[in-house]
Each structure stands twice: as structure tokens, then as C-alpha cells.
Amino acid sequence: MISFLRKIFLPQPEPMNVIYIHKKNIINNLEVLQALQPKAEIFPVLKSNAYGHWLKQITKIIKKLDVPYLVVDSFPEYMIVKKYAKQEILLLGETLAENYYNFNFKRTTFCISNIQVLEYMGKMNRESKIHIFLNTGMNREWIDEENLSKFIEILKQYPKIEVTGVMSHFHSADKTYSNGIEDQIEKFKKMYYQIVSAGYSPQWRHIGNSAWMMKMKDDFFNSFRPGLAMYGYNPLDQADENFNKWKKLKPALSIESRIISLHDLWYGQWVSYGQEYKSYEKEKVATIPFGYAEWLPRSVSWKVMFSNGWRKYFKQVWTICMNMCSLLIDWSVNLYDEIEIVSENLSSKNTLKNLVEQSGMITYEFLVKLDKGIRREVIN
Image (cartoon, rainbow, N blue to C red; front, side, top):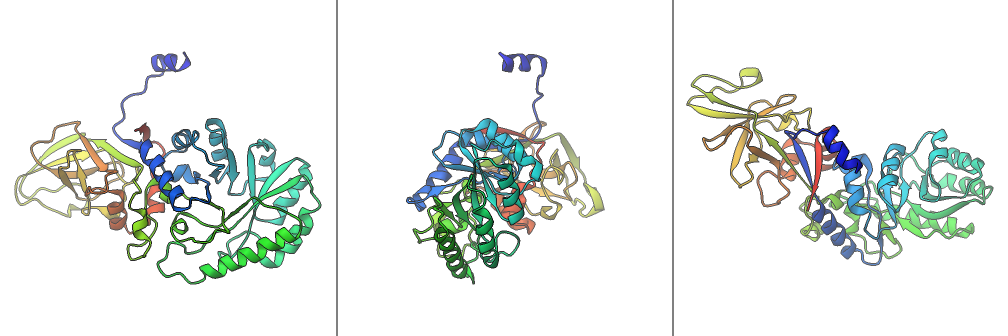
């Protein structure tokens, strides 16, 4: 009833730009990941707005799946996932001390990476669950080997804190030839057994991300935290011997805009800023309301193709502007026609992979920069 009233009194205009989330592709990717590591559990990573896909929608897709945790990075992300999913939440990142009082401790497990937070949680005197975050080589944060004894000593003062997992993070799992990965694994095991020797029995041991799910052959690790691969993107370089293991992944998003302007370009005229190109014959130009404010970087100007959805491609030309860009089209295009900026079909010329390669950015960075104001719609 409430939804019906909202449609009447709060109508939503049809958007010019839409990001489509392909539900079946998310589910397919999780099945591919599970098949790669059938003896381990998967903790889907939903941080950074579900890698730009939109946290609420992705949470609603995954909530019916049998996974032990949904992984978030912050308190605001936790609030959304708690509302729309039933699974336990693994809080990966830090939060202000006063925020801990606002968590549901029955549904939340905290990744603890420093002694100060451990002491604060202990003084709260509440039943709580933690995963100890070990520094095995990233050296950004987390518990160092030389501090682990002190950490355990303080942990023993707070019997209401239950250690349910031990975790770390690889520094270069996606590299074809990576130095130091085996050292990280060896250090993890050494620190893990130190925790076990202190009387703790963590259920979960996890260090692997998407890239390492394809490479890991060690049953010691019984869980993984995939992010990028869950959304359909291969984190490995094409030269990597494991690259083809990801052929069954399917990108989970496509992006469409609409033509807002058609313009005849005559000899000697130009389009957009900088007068970079002048026409030497009659040409037809279309403009769509999608620029670098929405997500499309200026660095791909002149380098990419968009589609009309029927595999007819049009070259993006001239400088990409803040809220619009232009295409060189033919006479079959009409005002308000849909233009597919990104296709989920890997055989298309306008894949996100191609955009990433032309931009000079990495896939992670490209995805998380998607404008939060663009409407997301879940489709099958």
C-alpha cells in the first residue's frame, strides 16, 4: 500500500541515464567462484557501494543465497545491509569508537586490526565476535607479528570477546609473477597457530581475494573474500596461466543513456571544447547527457565506441564534457533513442574492459567512480 501511494504522490520521472544490474550474472559469478573453491565458503564483498553497482540492490540479490557473511567497510554500509539482508555482517573497516554502541552485536562480526579498538570493545563488556586482522606484508595497518603476543595478552582480559576468524590480505595476488605471496602465507600460518596455542579456536581462516581464488590450492584456508570477480571482471592479467579459469564470469552491469540532441555538422565546423577537430564533409552529431561527472573520463575521448543496442556502433568523438559527450552517427538515429555506453556482453565493442584499457585506470577505480545519482535498475 505504501509503495502504491508513493507512486501516486512521489512519481519518479523517467531517467536519461540508467545503470542496469543483471541479477542472473551476479548469481552466475558466485556459482563460478564456489566451483573454483568447493571446500571453502565465500564472503561476498559489498564495500564501496558494491563496487559501484549499488549496495541496496546487490544486497537484495544476495540475501537469499547461502553465504556466512556479507562484507562491508563502514558503518553506513552496515546500516543498509542490515536492513535488506538476513546474513551476518563482517565489518572490514574501522569506525569511530562511539559508533560501536549502534551495532547489532548478534549480527555483526568485527575485523579488529589494532589493540586500541580491542580494548574499547572489551570495556563495553558485551558478547561480541571478532576476526583478528593480521599484517602479513601489506604494512598499511593490522596486527604485526611483533605485537601479536601483546594483543593476545589483552584479549584474554575480555572473555566476552569470541575469536571466530583470522584474516589477512595479499599485496599482489593479481600479479602474474608475484614475489612474497608464499612468505605471506607462511607468516599467516605462524601467527594463526600462535593464536590457537593461546587457547582460541577460530572457525574461519581467510586471506584470499578474487585473484587468489583462482590460484589457491591450500585447504588450510577455508574461506575467501571475492569482490571484483563477483561482479564479473577478471582480476588477472591475460598472460597469467590462470586467466582462462574466469571465462565463465559475466559482467553484472550495463549502462544506457539517451540522445538529447542531433546536429548537422558542415565543412569547417567543430564540436565541443578546444576546436580539436574540424569537419571536412557533412556529418551528423548526436549528444548524450553523460560526461565525466557521471563517470566517463575525459581520457577516453575519441577512443571508444557506443552502441544503439542492435550492435551498430558509433564512435565517441570530441572532448568529453562534464555532463555530456558527442557521437558521430548516421541518419538512422533519432532524438531520444537509447545509446548503450557499456554492454554486459563480452563480445561487444563497448565493454567496460575496453573502457578501462583506454582510460589508463584499473577496473576497481573505474567501477567505484560510477555516479551514485544515476538510477540503478535490477533486471534478470
